[in-house]
Each structure stands twice: as C-alpha cells, then as structure tokens.
Image 1 (cartoon, one colour):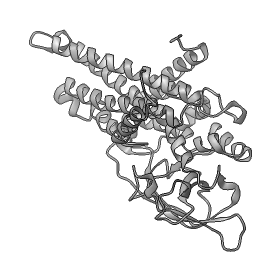
Image 2 (cartoon, helix red, strand yellow; image 1 turned 45 degrees about the vertical axis):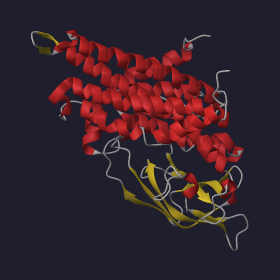
Image 3 (tube, rainbow, N blue to C red; image 1 turned 90 degrees about the vertical axis):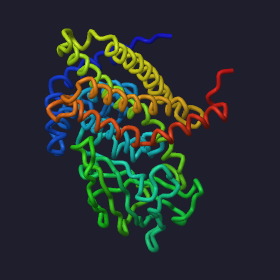
Amino acid sequence: MNFDLPDDLLELRNMVRRLARDRVRVRAREIDTTGEYPQDLFDLFRDTGLTGIGIPKEYGGSSAGVLGMVIAIEEIAKYSNTAALMLLLTRLATGPIIIAGSEEQKSAYLSDIANGVKRASFGLSEPQAGSDVMGIRTQAKPHPTRDGYWILNGTKCWMSGVAQADWYTIFAKTKEASSRAHDSITAFIVHREWEGVSVGRLDNKMGVRGVDTGELILTDVEVPPNSVIGDVGGFKLAMLGLNSMRPAVAARGIGLAEGAVMYATQYVQSREAFGKNLADFQGMQWEIAKLACEIEAARLLTYKAAWLVDKGCFDKQWVPYLSMAKYYATELAVKASNLALQMLGASGYMKDQPTEMWYRDAKQLTIVEGTSQIQLGLIAKGVLDHDLWWD
C-alpha cells in the first residue's frame, strides 16, 4: 500500500496551491461581498487547464480523474468555496455524459467544458423534491408529431451556476409526474438558448456567493432524441452521477477546514492574553490538535473515495464509503469554521476577518448533493445490507 501521490498529482497540487495563494486568496472577500461572478478566476482555471481536470484526455481534458479534481478543489477551498464550486461544476453536469453518454454527446459537450468554451449546470432538485428525488414533477412527454422528440415542462431549483451555464443536464419524469417507479426518470441535455428555457428567480444565499444559484423554468421545451443521456428510464444514472461527485464535495469541506484552522492558529500564535500567547494555553492547543486529527482522517476518507470513483467503483456496494467521505468532511468544515471563529473571539465575528465567511460557507456543504442525514441513511443501509462489513 502506497500513500504517496504520483509525481503528476504532486505537481498538480503544487501548481494549484500557488494559484490559490496568489490569485484566489486575494479575491475571496470581494467575491463574497459583491456576489459578482468571478470571471477572472474562471479565465484563470481555463488558461491553466483546470476546467478540464475531470474530463478524459480524449475529449480535451487532463485525465487527472476525480482524485486530481479533489486535490485541486482542496487547495482552492482553503480560501474560497465559491472558486472551488466553479471547478466542481465542470464535472457535475458532465458526469452523467461521461458515465452513460453516447460518443456523439461526449465529443459535442465534454471538449467545450474542458476548454472553458462552455459552462454547464445540473438540474435535479425541485421545490417539493430535494432529498426526495422520486418526488420530482418536471415531466417529459413524447412529442405529438416529431418522432423521438420530447416536450419538457417543469421548474428546477437550487441549481448552482444556473445563470452562467450554456447547457444543462436535466432529470425529468418520462412517465406520469406522480410515478415513483425508478424507470420513470430520464436525463436530458437542454440548451439555454432553446425556446421555452429561462432562468427564473436567483437565490439570496447565506454563503458561497458569486456563483448564482436559482431556478430553471422549462415551458414546452422541444428536446431532440440525441439529447437523451443513456436509456429512457435511467433513474440509476442520477444516483451514479451524485455518487461519483461526493468526494469533490468532501474536498470543499477539507479545504475550508484547513484554511480556517491555519488562519486561526496563526492568529492565536500572535495574540497575547494574560501575559502570554493564546497558543500557549493547553485548552487552545488541544482544540487545534483535535481538528488536525480530524482533517487528516477526512482527507484519507476522501482520497480513498476519489480513488474508488476513478476505478469505476461508485454503484450501490461502494456508496457507504463515498457517503462517509462526504458526511465526515462537510460536518468537519462546520466544526472547524465554528471553532476557528471562536478562537478569534469578537474579532472572528467581524467582516474584516475571513472566519465569518468560512462559517457561512461551511453550512452549504452539509446540504448540497445529499444532506448529512441522507448520507447517514446510506451508510447505515450499507452496514445493514453488509455492503460495509468487517467479517
């Protein structure tokens, strides 16, 4: 067993670490304050090849895989979870195409994402269907006169990058909207410029500002047959897509935790109280030590999960391992940002310190792409089904 990263991933980590320190860190607070999309950071990621990090080489990517993406996201998230989300979005909407798309779809859509020519977004959740995926009501009906075409109607919500995307991966019911059968959900590629496609209300978010989250409204949208991803009735594809992305969300949590702990540690080393540095107090040292242990544990879980995904191990039997990484790392982000803010005291609560931004950003991670409660349920089911077993 070798825990050393190969040379190419070490080079990637070092390159992204420099970019994060020099270019992302100085923009993080401004992005959070203005809420404006950081086009300069997207251009940076495009020009350095990071938009293609999760895309196979044959379609213009770097083939660094999910592990490479995890490493890059971890470095960026130390300073800005908004910037880390931008990188994650290059793989979220393309995941179903990578997994089940036709060669035509891969050639048409993956290269433009890898090269930074296009952006995409992922639409599954709806106002009445967040964790309850089978509760979605967006419906795709066969076109009455055009063979193989579909008509989509419905509203998607909480879509990250919805306002910046050129196309969307959309999941819809191809049976009755009330159906809860797994063969009733299908994935479609939907272009933003198509008639009937419009961006609705944008959300006023607590954190992770700068990448718009909001609604996509579909009104009698005509979708051609070559925009169906995989098979009609492909609910499993939605789950496989989410499963494969859990390490990337976990990486956002690890990076945030690392950034918060490093910042707070430097602060308490320089702040005097009761005649000595705050870092000299045993109570402070123990909190730092416990967080350091948990960060390393979260990294091991997450790197293993990414390694599994790159091996193609992200179906049912592997879900507990992927869910553990997502659950543990994102809950750690909340814990670490809370303790970092507390270590700074009143100063940590003020907007001239990044700790309050990390504190707001961290909570999003325990909700998106499967809440902590959903992850716990999946882990428990894995144990009950003996997918996760020790005998």
